[in-house]
Length: 159
Image (cartoon, rainbow, N blue to C red; front, side, top):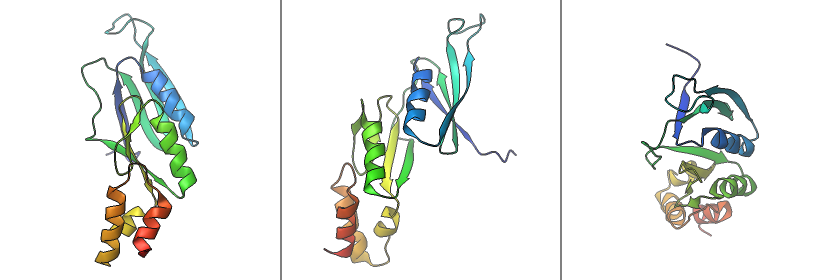
């Protein structure tokens, strides 16, 4: 079995190279890799992009131009844990450009890929052993689309 981790394949309908460039422009620790092109054997037009390797924060991806048969849905999402509101706002704002917020830190980007932009301490707050704190924080969380870290912390503290 390989020890190099996994590569996530994202299926696009002609936007693979555009999407890889878009994602690598957002994440500071990222890079583009190989670009594979269709040959005369097809099925796409010879010379057009088949797939693009890229990496975001150490996670390997390949963007594949597979055609219109499949689209993204909320069954799979990528979580981005953020240390402060500035970082959370950065990712939220970049990834909702051309996309939209959904609920509880979830969003869909302009390609239909689902992301969760989450404060690093949120899981600890909603799973606090004190059920009153956990409940207050969960209620606050459920009322938000984009997370407000200060409001979540106040709810957790009972302020």
